[in-house]
Image (tube, rainbow, N blue to C red):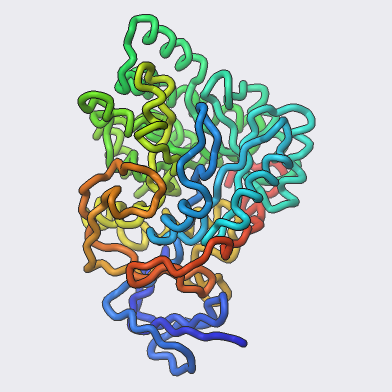
Length: 466
């Protein structure tokens, strides 16, 4: 039996602007937009609210083993928190496992299959670009996994050298797809960390000191050069430093296909948090580290100028008790990452839209439309007929106080404790199903589906200009 829902009385916000319109959902698809549509079905009055396309979070780490532990959110709690925050699709990072990309993909699919509340896809992290792994990249594209991540940091675990990165870039010229880089100079950081520990400097603040912005700038520039040699595009994840932004801007001014994202924590938090009394700074350890207000200003400007195209969460959650505490005597053992998946939309609305740094249309583009397009989610990211009915009914008049006491993430703190946001999701639909509404989660684990992605704007071949 077909079901029809009409969202009536709201203002539809797209990447191009906003207008008063009703939205008609039939089963899992948007079928019509218009004013005062006369159609049978369940009518939901959303007067006073804005209707946004469901957010896409293209950078998450759920159930990820790292640094002797595993991220605190699995695909159940992580996708519940995402949905409450208005995200209806996540693209998580599957890790090469036992040398194999296919084994890694199957492991991550199994993790998500019976738990995810919303739709999900995967990037594939290539940590050993062996001949067999390079060959498997074609299998990944066939499976709908069309983006590959290479770490230029974390020496001794995830880090790949320049030759491996170049191999991965060249392979996408044969298979299509997009290479993402974690751009920090791992060799320099490793030496900096060793020197600091030899001097007895073990506090959380040393995390930033040993990863200065020059290590991010250098690696960003090097990745751009390697991509240019390979005649392929490159996407720089979690850009935090003004100097790294300048590397990307210069490349784009020269017409090169270089893209990037920043994250909500780099736009709202600074390095000062790492120097909190005692060990509390550990709550703010992430890589690259938090920077300064000047860097934030440059990041906001780069988003307005489209030199950075996406704002993600890089959700990589660890409990303070028992996990972050692994580095109490050695900052280099503090698991890197922050819990952010639930609050991207309200934080960007509060610190972006309400401050005049972005419009609602720009917010929609940066968090939904652009990531869907860039990563080949062909039915996501728009409020338009024929697209999945992934929708956020956003109430700009509501008030949200962020607290670990009321969030849905499986982690014992939030870096935004007691922050107040004006505006929050009132209802969230995923493929036509109400997954969050009235303050309650309405979905069940396992309803989320794996989404096969196209190569989007990045087919095989020589891509030197876009």
